[in-house]
Length: 271
Image 1 (cartoon, rainbow, N blue to C red):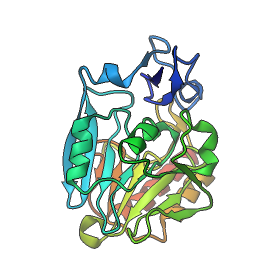
Image 2: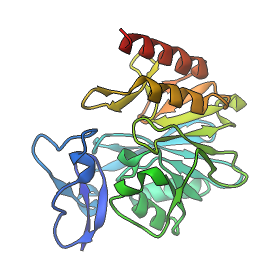
Image 3: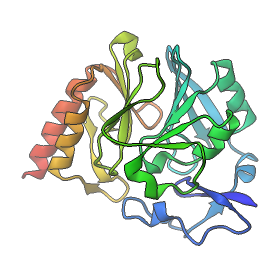
């Protein structure tokens, strides 16, 4: 039996002799079914012509991006800490070269994902590193497409991901009920970094960020949801912000960028 991946969003499903009837992630109004209809692939098929680029970003932070682009094309981030390494968000593709690259950096102790669009191959990655725990917010439990014993559902507003790592997952909501970001206090030369997926997304003008219910379908968030996101990250110091894609970075003054971007957003939707 194969564990099929949705080609449009990259979500992986339980083993089956035939592809699932549909992908609930893509059928939701935040996403979309591909223009050629629902299509599927497997890890074995992807390994024929794909690989992961390993991209050093800053000391203690490495990005992994699949080429050619697959699904929504996001970047997974490996954060090195004294307590062990944590993978923030996930990508579908995994091969021996990727496992070796992570082993050379000290292995993997935990996986944390911001929201269901980035769950992708979490079970595959966990098992490759000895069933390391996967942290997902309980509010997004219904969106898990491949249940696995390694998944730990956390509740409330924050969780310390790995004791001694200093990493804190912060529930912001908005894009999904359980959408989260990750605070890395050692990032940006000790000034703090925030890794956000697209709970907070980096704009093309990288001095700014934005917030959406659906990015591909251009559905905005309500004002109160944006205010909640800003309030959730306000207690945490960070000078840099990493979005969910390669080079989607607010390199400095990122906390102020979140505040002023929210102000601009709220002003525009208020008319």
